[in-house]
Image 1 (spheres, rainbow, N blue to C red):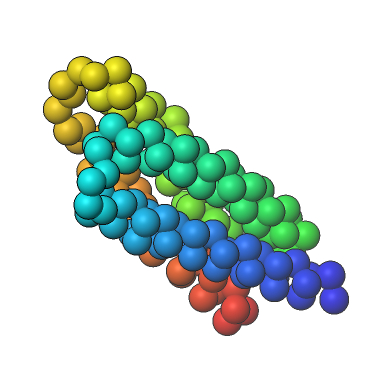
Image 2 (cartoon, rainbow, N blue to C red):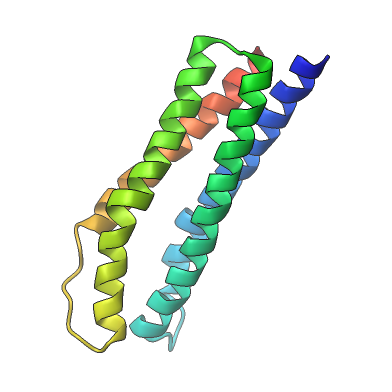
Length: 143
């Protein structure tokens, strides 16, 4: 019984995490810069706040999922998918976000900073995370 509840909770957390990434990274962020009259500096300042909050919540979901999987003892595939999602998040937080923050700090200070390749790396990580979370959620529900 406890195992079943843990699997369902992990699936729910996975799909909420997935929905948040899709909503923020693939809807809000690109559309924000299409808003008429929105200055790049204001958009970047808002983006920093939004992504800081998103990443914090993502860490919480990753911990919730990990705790559920410790209780449930699922298949190796489920464990691998959960670990992959967590690794992508760690890469974003420790390697990519600091570079993006450095650029946005320069832009917010009024400097002319060229677009960073880290932005493309972040997008690749988001795509990988979406695919991994969708697969994880599917495996959790099918088990």
